[in-house]
Image (spheres, rainbow, N blue to C red):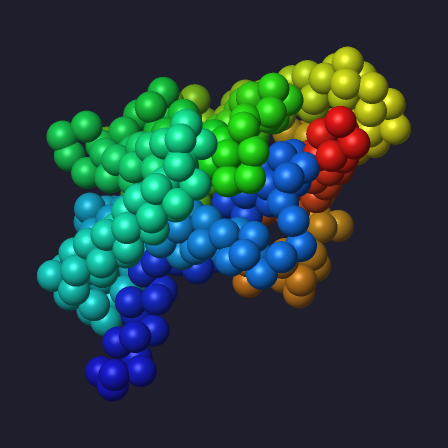
Amino acid sequence: MSFTDKVRAHLEILDPVTWISVFPCLAGGVMASGAMQPTLHDYFLLLAIFLMFGPLGTGFSQSINDYYDLELDKVNEPTRPIPSGRMTEKEAVWNSVVVCLLALCLGVFLGFYIGGERGLIITSSIVAGLIVAYIYSAPPLKLKKNILTSAPAVGFSYSLVTWFSANALFSEIRPEVYWLAGLNFFMAMALIIMNDFKSAKGDKEGGMKSLTVMIGMKNTFLVSFIMIDLVFLVFAWLEYQWGFYYLVVLMLGGLILNIYMQVKLYADPKGGVAFMGSAVDDVFGNTIGQSEVEEHKAYLRFQIANNVLFLSNNLFAAGAIGMKYMQG
């Protein structure tokens, strides 16, 4: 392999597509603080925390997952860098060690630079996130083996700590952020449950207790949809309590659209919401991935619409919260 091909393999194992998943939570946490200033200093801080949780933190979780899931990936994703032979297992270990150390160094730096309780929140968040990312994939705990531990681990690492860290970067933790972080935690759990569709075959052969393996794909859709709809309802109630009445209408409208798509998906787990197919193939495919499993393809179509509805409300609510503290 050429040097360029080897670099591409090292980048691919960090799975850049997944970095995007933490950005809305980080942006929401910063916006809700209402304290970021349009200065070069604050933009550098924002870039630092994006790098820490995105390419480094999320990258570490993907790299270490590929290393420990080699046998599963030979079945589920044989084109990944290690099973395809483009990267050795030793190179994968070095890849994960380097990005882990860089994330830790950046977390410690930000912790000392911000200082006090806020700095401690940032440092402890990335440390906890990296630990959870490791035990998620590595034996003997291997949290991903059971849905009861895997889904909360994903919600914690991708949503909970990111909201708190980004908020602490510029202010003390706003009371509303506890709620928003919690809602994003449960939304991440609901979505990761359906994401297991793509690896159902390998999970079953490898003894992994994903919800899909345990109760089937159609019932997994139902469980996830109930969780998603409850998140939308609680979010709408909170917006009403906070006085963001225009956002309540937006959230409830999004819930109605979601339920419409959910009914179609439950009735037809493979071909449901086919009208969103072009959005996956032609627009968002490079950022959310592709799949050969029909149920997973349907989930990807639903995910695009759901994320647009949910994340837009997240950012609108975070902006409204931030404006309240700026005016206060």
